[in-house]
Length: 289
View 1 (cartoon, rainbow, N blue to C red):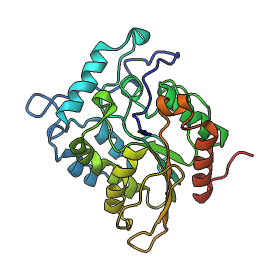
View 2 (cartoon, rainbow, N blue to C red; view 1 turned 180 degrees about the vertical axis):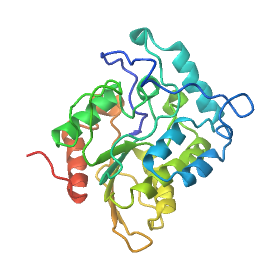
View 3 (cartoon, rainbow, N blue to C red; view 1 turned 45 degrees about the vertical axis):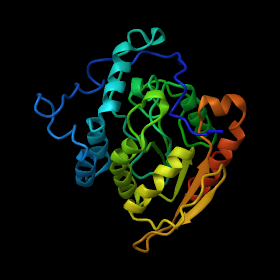
View 4 (cartoon, helix red, strand yellow; view 1 turned 30 degrees about the vertical axis):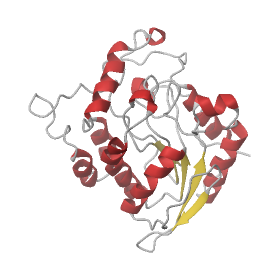
């Protein structure tokens, strides 16, 4: 059974429409040579821009303008144009979705990729779909999220000590990025991990795809990854030493919060809260009683 999935099953979630205009998504960027920002459609762009990003804010802005994977660009923009009747009136984000959470996070949660009508619509990881409802409800139970629901970028959700991200930042067709798309996107995650190194102490990986994708990024980000690489399992736990002698990082495996898993009981709220709670305690985060 496949226990990973993109960030939601694209089930409509009722909520206010995302406003256009100020505070909405940036203007669409065309490819190089057509009036867009130069280089964003180059497969090497994530590596160059990621390496040059001096902060997570800068990294997030660079992620959001990436056009390095033609198939993903075409799909995310097609979904944005066509939308769904349930979301009539929404202006889809329809571009890469950056990570979300504080720059001094002690716990990083890594999924797979944004859902076509979830993060690709709202512009925020795990927002606007049932998978996000499950994840943020668990974080809220632990006292790490200000609310249990995530419907749009202006909904007031705040995370405490936790950041959420993905190894692929664009919604993929059929919820399946190709290995090449995963590898092209890897520098973003590697740089995100590198920028979080002063504070991050634990990482929860949701699903087998994310588990496979995260270890090369961890190696590039400065941690020593064992060989052979650890196998994915729900409840798996691996300690990685820092290459420079800094603090270790604890990596936890968890089934993905996809509807396939949560609706069938493969992943229950108790199972998810258990892994997230163990990781948060390892990271030194205070939890709700």
